[in-house]
Amino acid sequence: MITATVLQQLAETHGTPLFVIDHDELRSNYATFIKNLPRVQAYYAVKANPDPVIVKTLFEVGSSFDVSSIAEFEAVYEYIKDRPEPEQRQWIKDNIIYANPIKAEETLMKLDKYHPLVTFDNLEEISKIRECALNSRVVLRLRVSNAGAMVELSSKFGASHDEAIDLIFEAVNAGLTVAGLSFHVGSQTTHFKNYMQAINLAALIFKEVKERGYDKMNLLDIGGGFPAPYDESVKPFSELAKRINTELDRLIAPDIKIIAEPGRFIVATAGTAVSKIIGKAVRHGKLCYYIDDGVYHTFSGVIFDHCQYHFDAFKTGPTQICTVFGPTCDGLDVISMTEELPSDLERGDLLSSRNIGAYSGATSTYFNGFPPAKVIQH
Ligand SMILES: Cc1ncc(COP(=O)(O)O)c(C=O)c1O
Image (tube, rainbow, N blue to C red; front, top):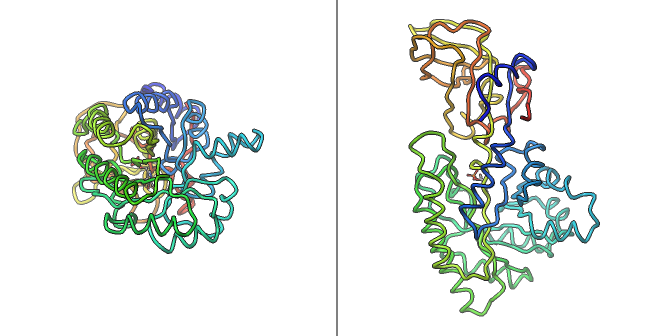
């Protein structure tokens, strides 16, 4: 963990706002993931934080990648572009999944030469893939329970159990290779049961498809959703992994390749924001701090990720419940209405916010002319 002293030194050297990425933490989270899920190949979900240096660190420790746009594909391709073409193709085949069930025609046309692994969940997508990327190996995304997740995805994506078999055979009849099944239980899931139910559903579908004579499905993608330890209420990852391993061993044949797309779990605890207090006011009797970073920048996860971040002051003293506002003129730029912070912080004092590596600066803008935080690789 990067200490408070180091964060202060970085702020002195580089100014604020800062977004500090801890690469030891990234490597450690990746190692924890693969150690606890030995049957599962980890495809880091680039969307969680597409910083090229994060992608590089994970590439170097042997991660595979889940991409959802051409830009994300290119962020990974960067690290294999100098290899001979056959080697590139093989690496892409073995290590990239394009896991956005709805893809633009141009995207499919660009990817086709790599024989990409791509997800789908509806009839329209089958005809699009057939027209634009016949060499794809397709993976059916199932709709599974997202109950208890911080970010719900099941109303936007996924085929129901009833639709699944028909869609698989529609794809086969359209001349596509159906490689397997995928699901996503919702991001930052707290209901571990979601994984168990989803694995059970996948096992049922594998069985039914085989019984109907199609035997080319050899991949199960258990998606993302693995919770980051934002607070003590999050149960240890080892507990979830144990339960997943039991279900995989019980229900999924050993010749089926199992992959996962962890995003938040790998990157959330590797990011720390360091901001400076630029103003202070008392409004309706409540102490308000204004800082030089906000929801249009590093704290965008407050809006887009439904995430509540917490602050640490570098000074101690009597505390009270405060509001922390971002620097823009927009009333939406509220980071927290309930932060317990020292009452006597002054203009120029620093605040840090840990566990902000996922879905945060990733969506940062230049709104109101305020630039995004400087990214510091540590
Ligand atoms: C298809 C897909 N895979 C993986 C992820 C990463 O999920 P998480 O960050 O919860 O691990 C997401 C997140 O939205 C996703 O949509």
